[in-house]
Length: 445
Image 1: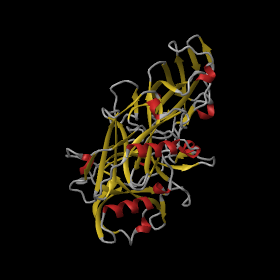
Image 2 (image 1 turned 90 degrees about the horizontal axis):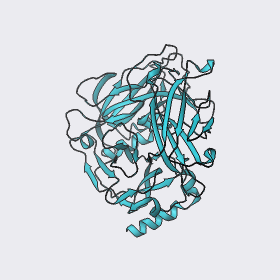
Image 3 (image 1 turned 180 degrees about the vertical axis):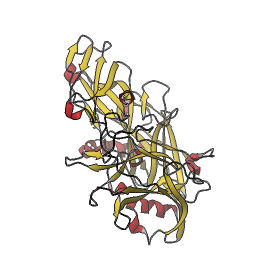
Image 4 (image 1 turned 45 degrees about the horizontal axis):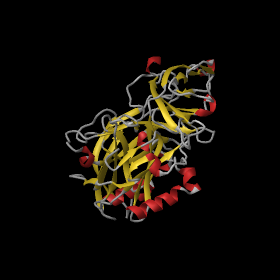
């Protein structure tokens, strides 16, 4: 079985079609709550140091009571998340494909699901090289892929000194944050720094909000300086909203009501996105009346016209947890969470999306609010696992792929920035990730 699966994966990986879309994260409607977390801290990005004791935990759920022997693998990519020219044997030690053997059925929950977990590196697989990796999970019975996620493996070879400040240009002073930094590369002999070094700067944990193709503004012996006035500036955005559903017995902050709702899944299917409908249907009996917790959040109001207000947030992340539970992974309920946004001066035709780690930083119809003319507000119900969540309301700009927070942009907003430094000498066949630095804009408020 391993030989057959490896041959199939190897054949797929060599096609040009795979190379074009390899770096795109996606999730099938069959799975929910896909997380790749550091085993020491749930809030850390999926980043580990090469040849260290760092480990990541992959976890996800499928609805119903039927378990599947899913498999996973890693593909090495360049700084642009395109497949590198390396073979699996060059960047993986052990088996290139492995089964996810740790799973458990949900316990004492209304909606049935199977929880899967896997920790890596492990005795069957380890990384030999630094760089970007795509984690793929699929069903070997039909070879259908169920999701992809990004994983980063780095080496600590260069030193990065960075800072965040207000934007230099007057028109951006109130809304943008500027990144200045230096790369100290005394351990690498660079012949052509502009072509050998690539830098990617990421805001929060969002790979769709990055700056790249950045050349140094000044080159000194052993040091590359990056000091731009506008090219490395980000919209400050606004602080994330939050809600806490770790307990369904009392109302925590931003929770308006909690009640057990009886629904006819098939009769009410038009009310939900296809993904939510599919997951509800898989977790319950087809066509029969069933129950699910409905958590209605307090109504949100657009804040763009107001001045900046500081509040603690997780920069869009989430924590899956349940109060008074020893095993929240398979004891937490899946609940329908209802978001409410007052219309105020918003156009009722405006396409507004719920955004953050809960949407995997995606803009799609599963998180699109619908306007309720009777209540004069935008609404959306989404099936989420118990935990603590951050979220924002965003809409698209006129430019392709551009989004912005409906609450506006403030230079004081607390954001986290990650600087990735890649190196590829003329005689190497892949880009090494030779350094990572994380900084925050907390000092600006």
